[in-house]
Amino acid sequence: MKQLNGIDAAFVYLDSSNAPMHIGGMMLYDPSTAPDGRVGVDQIRRLVRGRLADAPSLRRRLVKVPLDLDLPYWADAQVDLNHHIRHESLPTPGTWHQLSQRVARFLEKPLDMSRPPWELQVIDGLGSIEGLPDGAFAVALKVHHSAIDGVAGLQMVAALHDGEAAPAETGRTDRLWTVENPSWLDLVLKSALPTVTADSATVTLGVPHALRRPTRLLGNVIGLGSGYLRRLIQPAPATDEASAAEPVPETRFNGPVSSARSTGGVQFALAEVKEIKNAVPGVTVNDVVMTVVGGALRSYLREQGELPEQSLVAGIAMSVRSDDERDEGGNRLNFRAVRLGTDLADPMQRLRSVHGSATRAKSVLNDGGARQLLDVADSIPAGVMGLGGRLATQFQLTAKVRMINTPVTNVPGPSVPLYLAGAKMVTLYGYALAGPGMGLVHCISSYCGNVTIGFQVAAELLPDTGSYEDCLRESFDDLYKAALTPAGQDRTRST
Image (cartoon, rainbow, N blue to C red; front, side, top):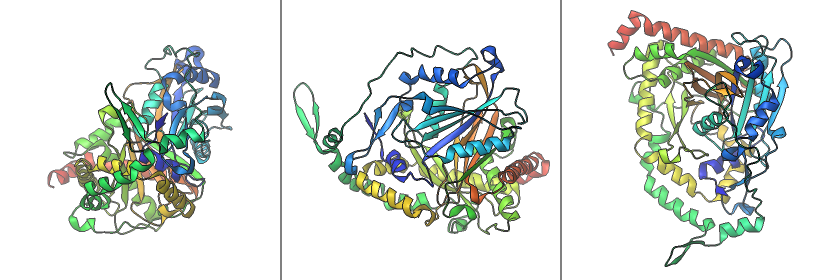
């Protein structure tokens, strides 16, 4: 068994019917490269079955310690692929909007945490989606956030795919693992008894897990210091220090939410994104896409008569996973607030503003305190964390403390084609979790020369996802034109 860290456990305790704590994705495939030109759900089940022995994150279930004496554990379990991998068809005509609705219904439903917390849905009947070949199908995936972060999620996706159309050997389907079924007494003793380590000369008794965390918590908080905490939660300035003191504005996306969800997404050519990036020294691809998000939010809220005077603030998830932690599951994340420049009409000014804000955010996370914050989370006693999570979900407390307006995650994907049972992946969209106070969430992904922005939103907050997709496209077009015109480049050089 493997114990969850503090952040992973927090996702378990925060899980609720209105805000299930799973992340997801949707991949589109061209089956013409597969044997016989088609891929069925049974083929995908056989492929996954052959790789379970080498994919711990697909076969582990959650085991909680009684009375929350300690953080939960992952235990190897039996896997019923008929439950985890299912098939559905879209009704005619099979449009993008219908596909987005089906994916949203899939993401709304909480995972069964008595099983390994992941599900995969194969969706065909995509007859009217522009740019897709005949027979194209989609695969929607959801995984509980306690099991993986975005980086580890892409590693899971890569494990299910091959680098060429001919499927690699999927492994022996008779390879088994030891199924772990610890009793409540086993779990209590594991938390309450002293740990024992031994070498050739001595036997050492350690502090029990249940007592170790409170003392670690005090030491880590003292070591972190209040100065870093203040810097972390203060949004980086957009253009000057005065803007840093501006409050996070209130929007329709920052209140309580229902359990209903909507999804959508747009795609851009990475080459065009890089053209914009190269027009402004120092700007990154992530800066460009965040500027697009800022422009889209400005346009949408302005159309609704709801645009705040102050800039909206994005919560950026940044991985602090070290090289030694690259192959581990779970979450090694920290967060930073970045202003999106929604108060600026000029796209180039907005881009420079986002770049400056994001640069400061990175400097804060790179000063060592980010990993200390993870140590603090790992030190919180399980009982305290469990009680806090239950109170937060019952009263939707995250909607009452407004720190950001919308989370934005960036998970770079592979630059080479991937194949599922021989079918070529055409594009990839990510969907981060939405919840109270964070009703609209953007996920930036890249794959094979394209960049996508996938979004998940509480359905009542964005009744027409198509109009917001149009806002994202128009924002990109405006930024592209501004960056590549001589006037736009002159404005950049003069700053």
